[in-house]
Image 1 (cartoon, rainbow, N blue to C red):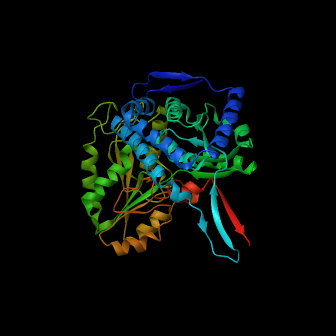
Image 2: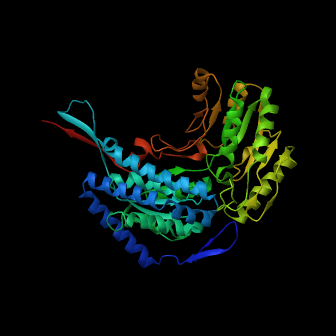
Image 3: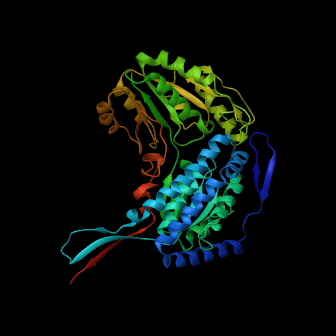
Length: 451
C-alpha cells in the first residue's frame, strides 16, 4: 500500500493499493491505443484539448493546491503558484507547438531534404514529490502535444497528486490513455521499461536514482532524460546589489522549505562584502514565518518527511563539527526544520561537498571573482547557478566559465517553458522544456527526396 501522510500534522490522508500486473498491462495497452489515435488527430485538436487542461487548472487551482500542501507540505501559496505555472506552460506550448514541430529544411544535393519531428509512443515519467505538479506537467505538456502519450510513476507519498493530474487530462478531451497514473514501486519498474510500447524514460530525482534508471533503460536501449540533484552556487561579487542579492538568496534557498534541486545551496560571497551580506540574510531569515502551510501568514512549511529532516540534521551537525559556525536555527521537530544559516563553510565540509535538501543556507568566502568561480565549479553537480554583479559584460564572460546547465545573472534560478532546462556532470543529461526539451523524445527523422 502507498500512504499519503500530512507532513505538518503527521495524519494519514489516504492509502492507495498498487496496480496489479493485469492493471499495468491494461494501461500499456490503453496508452499504445491512445498514441495511435493521436497520430490521426490534428495538431489543432491537440492544442484545443491542452487549452482545456490549462483552463481546468486555473479554475480549480486552489483545490489542486490543497492536495499538494496536504501531501508534501509546501505552503498553500507556493502550491497554488505551482499549479498556475503549469496552466501557463500549457498555454505557452499550445500557442507555440506548431513552430516547435515545424520541419527544418536542410540544403543538400537532394531535390529536397529536411528534418521531421515525429512522436514515438509511450514515455514513462518517474517523478519526485517536491514539485508534484510542475515536474509532471513540464514533461507531459510538450510530449502530449507532440503526439506521445505519458505514463507516470510518481513518488509514493504524492499518489493523490498523481491521480488528480490524470483526472485533469481525462476530463479535458484527450483520448483515454493519453496520460495515466501508475501506482507501482521502483523495484517493479523493469518489466515496464522493457516493454516495447514504452519508447523512452524521463526521471527527475536524486543522482543515485538517475544512475539506476539510466542503467535499466540502457539495458533495453531506451532513450532517457535525467534531471538529477544539484548543489547550486549563488555567487555574489562585491559590486552586486547586496540587498537584492540577499533577498533572492533567501528566497532561492528557503522556498519549498529548501527542497529543490535548483535551490541556492552554496552562497559564495566575495570577502569584502561577507559581513554586510551575512547581516542582511540573517535579518531576512529571522523574519521567516514557519508553521502551518495552510495558513496565510506562513511563508515556510515543513519538510516532506521526518526522515528527510533527520538526514539534513546529520549533515548540519557534521558540518559544524568540521568547523562551520551556526549563526541561526539548527533545530527541528518532526518535519519542521527551522531556517538555518552556517558561516565559515569551506570546500572540505559536508554542506559544501554534499547536496543539502532542506532549509540550510551556507556562506562561503571567496577572495576574488576567480576564486568564486573555482569554488562554484568544485562540485560533482552542475544543474543551476546564479551570479550577482552590476557589470553585465563581466557577468557574460564569467558565465561561460561556470560548469552548469543554467546560469542566471542577477536573478533566481528557475525553470521556464521558453528556455531549455537541464544539467551537466552528476546533475544529469538531456533537456526539458522549450524546443530542445520537446524534441528529446521525438524521432528526429531525415527526409531525403531525389528527383
